[in-house]
Length: 126
Length: 126
Image (tube, rainbow over all chains, first blue to last red; front, top):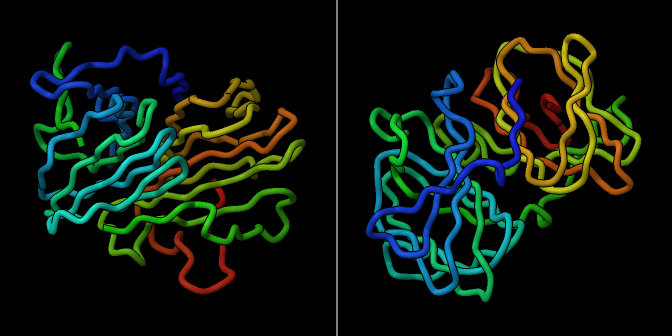
């Protein structure tokens, strides 16, 4: 087994995405056979890119509060303890509307080209 | 998308496993295509069954502290913020050694017969 505090892993910033970092905690590099665990942090007033892709997200909000926008520009409140399932091809973005960091786990299936293989690469944000 | 506070879902107790509950938050019933999210709680002094199975766990410790025992009876400390990858066929058990609840997310791939399909069923604990 592998045990690692998420705070022991350096957070990687996204080029061109202000105030968002990612840590790939468990993934292909650990020989995880099916899916990966990332910890994502969004600073107050910042957001992840509004986008969609052909794979799902399973999310648990660890800390903070904000909204997820959907394809109709509707805002859905999230806070500590929220679980979120975003289906493949659903448009989404995570917006921090709180005063502290918005931190969440974002699980993804193994997708070719998604997980970074080199130092300093980030992969997809969420 | 589906958003649900884990506290809005009733926790299901395991028959014969004292002080352990599970909530299946995201799974096949949501048409999640690849893997499932469960929230597991272990009361102080209690533990999940010591066992192994042919699929992996990806775990994030949300609250509390304790140990995971491995096949050699070695104890590995876990606490809030620990991430844990347990490979297929690795023996493991989660032991709450703290004064409060030990709460964690335990992600599993879709396995035939694992996820409960009826009310009151529990599936595998962790």
